[in-house]
Length: 209
Ligand SMILES: Nc1ncnc2c1ncn2[C@@H]1O[C@H](COP(=O)(O)OP(=O)(O)O)[C@@H](O)[C@H]1O
Ligand SMILES: [Mg+2]
Image 1 (cartoon, rainbow, N blue to C red):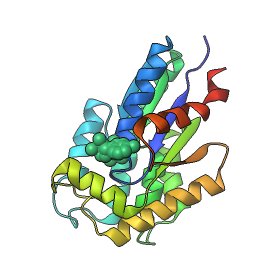
Image 2 (cartoon, rainbow, N blue to C red):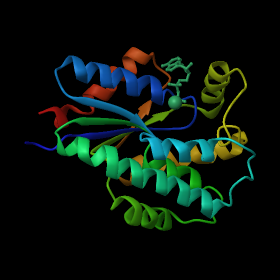
Image 3 (cartoon, rainbow, N blue to C red):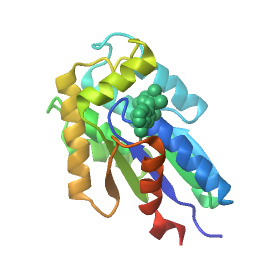
Image 4 (spheres, rainbow, N blue to C red):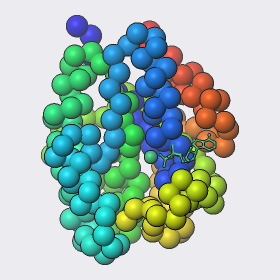
């Protein structure tokens, strides 16, 4: 049996990741493929408990390193119990955020280097990487307006950090597309949801054959 494919959706809060993850999963399912739609942090019962720990409470609830370790722990559980088994069954994994979110967010302070975050991923998840990653790119002002309209001002612990932080996160995501263009594709998220889904499909042509 052939291995499945692993696609992750990345970008800042409000850029349309969850919208596109759903649309992509539906469209692939209609083509007769076995699809597993999942998210991070979370995706398994244990990892969802860690998600709750990470996304609720005050901004200073966790030390930066503890936070990075918790994300890596949730991901380890997700990879071991859901993603790897599904890929082995030949399924397509559509994952709403993955390790690039850890790299983009946890490195902003300058306290943790990208190589250290990847080391955590190596230990926790044996370095599993997606076959393709989409970074949904939107000006921070537009993304935060969309997120605020969606959440009615009630954003989570990390989403509620200031706009400078979120701009730095977006800059990190853009850099990943420059550094690794084969895997990471930067997608202009200012278009309609339908137009963006079409664009994602253009960018998985090689994986579908
Ligand atoms: N292409 C788009 N154009 C306009 N609004 C969008 C688009 N895609 C998503 N939205 C809306 O923007 C908000 C944020 O989208 P969402 O998919 O939840 O983003 P994320 O998961 O990246 O935080 C939602 O209310 C969603 O309906
Ligand atoms: Mg979302």
